[in-house]
Length: 463
Image (cartoon, rainbow, N blue to C red; front, side):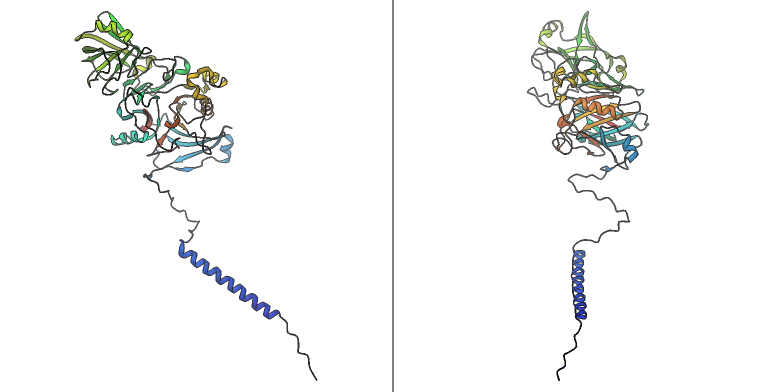
């Protein structure tokens, strides 16, 4: 008799099959992990702080400042509405009384601001003329390296005055603004309401200077220079500037270059006088050379007086070789006669925390109220100098970089400065020249990705 076999449960086989499958998967994952560890180093323990890894670039950046967001939530709520964020660029090499910040404006602009405490006993404001003469340009980085070779330690520097990059006369690098360095009156223009000159109005009070007792000045500075020969007097309009019908009498000093680079001017070499020229000056001289064709050689121990043709003809008849005379200079306002360090810009934009009325009119008219400065009504990279009761500021606004920073108009920049506590400010040369140097490197992003050679530098340095 046939017996039907007992039915066996499939569960043991299913369990065994699942176990084999799990073992197979675990084996494959173990092999993958082993291969990954052979290709790359193990993951570091996140509980242990690792040393900072700096990117490898073409130039040394041993001291390059790192970035740290120092704004807490409570502090962030206190920021002006125009400030999207504020960060501090820090380094162990920063001295006491110095700070460097990066601001982000709500309307797509990035600013870098170097700050110096005015009462810091280890820091001072200073200026440096590119390559130590008028007719050459130099980058901010190069200028700071030269100073370092002389034992001068610089913490920050920004491009300063306006000038000619190049022209058919060979006057590349010639400053349009005032420059006083170590007490020497290197350059001062005539106040004219045309491009390149400071307009004779409150808006044109564009020279910044520091008195020996530490007072900060921001004024329209006038030369008040006179040459006296016998009972004849000649007003001097400018020093180391362009001699033409707008500015007919100009003194050229050895700081200018080898020659005056004038054309058709009547020129007189004045020797046996005291150099350098200063804000309060008087000296006897002797006329040792007369040149009716211009472009005279400038001796190292003399100055050359250039007079435009319309005025120069009459003086050409009066001045003969070996003629004695007196040169006198007295800057106004009077406080400027003792200034040891001074630098000029283009326009004054803030006064006592308020935007200059001319700049407000300029903004409302969209640049039509001052056509010669119409560039200022557009968003571009900018550089500036400002100060408050307790701080000095060197500022750069990045621009022409979609996604990073589009720049600012002059009005927008003045409005932003007022928001962050700056009370007085002037505009420096901008565009592709805008560069802020700190601790061996340019910290902002110049418009053309490289430093453009400039005319002079405003500095924060060790005393």
